[in-house]
Length: 174
Image 1 (cartoon, helix red, strand yellow):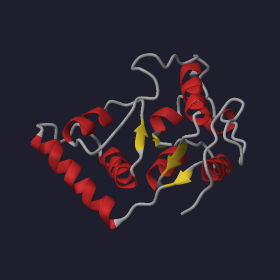
Image 2 (image 1 turned 90 degrees about the horizontal axis):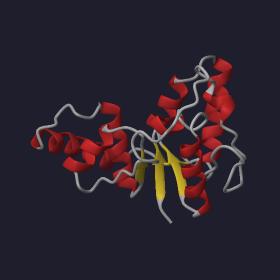
Image 3 (image 1 turned 135 degrees about the vertical axis):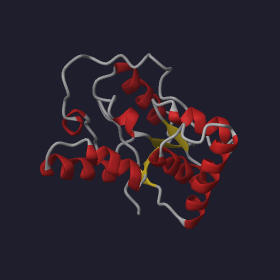
Image 4 (image 1 turned 90 degrees about the vertical axis):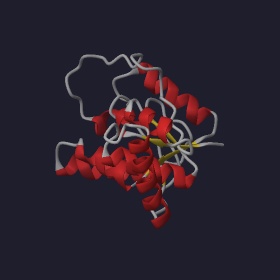
């Protein structure tokens, strides 16, 4: 069983991309764990459009993903990742949040699931970190339906390993 820390770049594509939904379902069918951390929760919450939508998003995320906390060890890994990026000549190739997410995942032995090349730069510079694109680059076909509410398009069924259209992981355990 592998722990996968889902990046917001994946969560935002989930309701509009069939390939992303299929890949997420395959992860769950294989009995892997979907995870979040405070930073991915905040990124997902930032994408909401009202207080009600934010509360629903947090309820769904907390009920569906295993929570990976930060720690002093993860903080040190973040510092080490940034140093490794600078050593590789890519000091600013990955943003602060993505470096911190990578550090939390590395510390917890999780693989980051992105649809974002920042994590490629981190993996190249810091070999202890692992990322696996949810689907190959340029394959997450997005249906042009405007900007749907991600919260209302992700159908999470707490307590199950597989949702009909969305994602289900483990319980919130801060």
